[in-house]
Image (cartoon, rainbow, N blue to C red; front, side, top):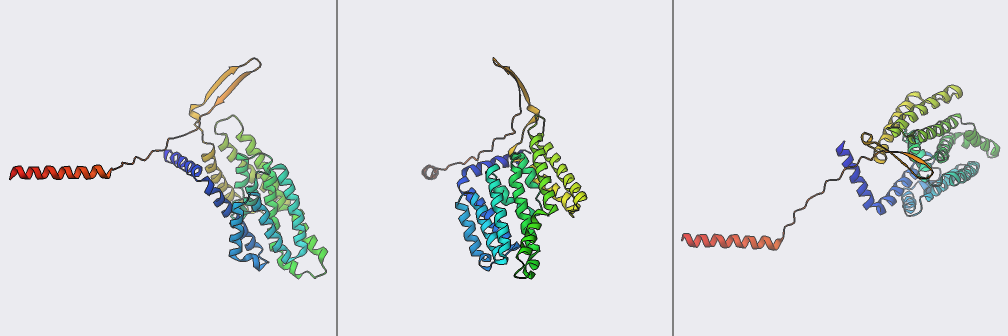
Length: 329
């Protein structure tokens, strides 16, 4: 345990010293992964599939505000959809505009969440997002998480229906509109997932703010169980065809990741809890103080060797040896 705490302090120190370099690097990697996933899922416009174009766009995002990652990803998605069908691009553009308005109104600071939610879906660990946002976010974070869920299911729906859209006749504009809109509005799996994530965020947020020992760990466990229950109940009611095994395994993996986040952000020593009471002219206060677990990182001791002193000592030893030899002679 001590080694882990020392590692945490080293990581914090490393991040604080190199923050100016690490933040652009993180934004570059997030933008790069996002663009690669969009190209892999859609990829209808060959010009955007070139790796150099992706690298240039990701590098540009690394030096711009974080919100630009969402804007660039949305523009790349719309260009791919425009190549496939103007109707798809129009519906997706209106949907993105509505999501942007909701996102900037309720949770403008959760930029990374909108991008990381689809990425975690592709990595088969989407449940880590509601658990994490319940720990470090607010109930309003459900808006940004829900936006990410909608974007993922939209891409999945259009990617799966490429042949259907291509086979539709040129004058079947209304059919294409209906196909895309139905994929968003009538997608029961998406609606159940949004509801499960919103309930999980709210429950984790409430529990982790309680004045009980190990509240963050209890919140992670309660949120994980609630997430699975809501998804399974939604599957029974709406027949969403959610894989039970994949849901359970993904939730367990997500809970483990959330535990790691909790260790680095909220690691307390409940054995040294103190209760303090004091008063002023109007109130009497009961304060529960729980100290954080901290360790001092071992300092490296470097022994400096002065070359001049070393040379002087060597000459002194040689002089003593010559004196002894002369005496012996």
